[in-house]
Length: 47
Image (cartoon, rainbow, N blue to C red; front, side):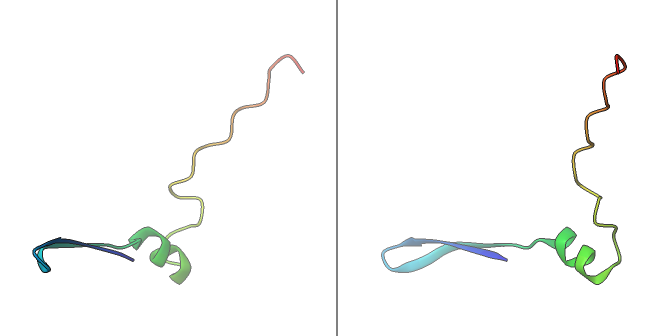
């Protein structure tokens, strides 16, 4: 989780929170671990 605050004159003027929902769901086993990964390149046909 990332929390970002913007300050002005020692006061918070905006705040945002970003969470890794995909990672949490993968750790829980709800979503497969390979979701969101780039596919591996296909082997060369010349072999």
